[in-house]
Image (cartoon, rainbow, N blue to C red):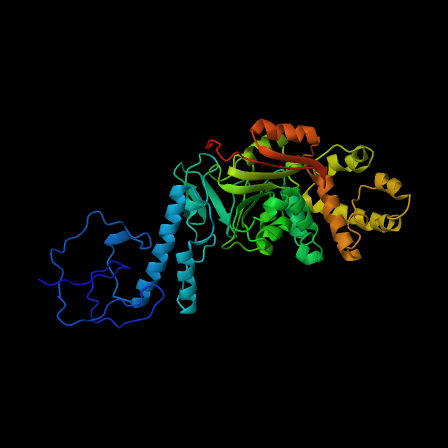
Length: 448
């Protein structure tokens, strides 16, 4: 009795002895004809435990097409990526990169001119089971016809390649429009100065900064990506989320790919399993949420044992209560976004020349209290006039239209971190108020 060799890629029972030898990235030589080789397989019977092919629309029982060498090569690549994603899902691992074997395979396929739709891990190609969890019941999500759907029948649309886990309208709508309008304003690559880098470096600290490369970072309240840019430049694997449509600006500035993914989500209902990130960073955001303490608690749930939580928060300042800005804010934050943006633009164009004129004089404090416009002539004097106007437009609109604005002292922030059980807490006044970081104990129990 003779036997027929089987293709290891597509499991097709085909006679490959006469197949042309092809140098491919996944199968160097499918078969070499040798004299005296048997021609049939003994006791050839169907295997009832054979796993269905996830890349075939009808599984393992589908009718096999005529043998094609390129199909075998592609299926091998697809299956390698699928196994890697399945292992990640079972281990709860949120690493965004394909294992080295998969990357090497993808590189060789690209060099050979072969398509690799399941090797380049973008939102369309990555397995949703290994990335997202339903924020309502925590179950795995599956991609179906432009939506992510869980077994509990909850579904979330994927718009412009970005999963949307929040309603169409939220209290952060003003933020979304402003970041889409000024999406490049605060990027270091646009200003030419390391303003965002220096701020993030200070919050993260020197020791942790040196180890950013290869770490899984959750960036909450990403905006248009001023800190996304810095993290990606340092080699981190970044997951950027925002409650508003600022995620569209973020994805436009830094398209999702091997090291970056984006989602529109609420910090209080994040679409991830617990304790999945080495670093959770939330800069310039917590003071704008309904409850800062609750927000910090939910952020901490995402930190792995031994990982770090990086935050900042507004603090109390006499200058805020002596300015005219609190008179404008209750009205502007309730207006349609298009109206509030037009109003702040006119306000900035009216008051900015005066701010520039008194920037170095004693009259600055008087103008500062009378004008609701925020300027950076003293904090960032190196910015040219055009950038000064853009920053004034962005920050003035931000400060006059935020729906929530909370203040906390350094002691209050530290006590929250201590109550949660963080170690190596650093908490100081700086930046926009209080900056803090802390580490989850390495032996901390897993929270679900």
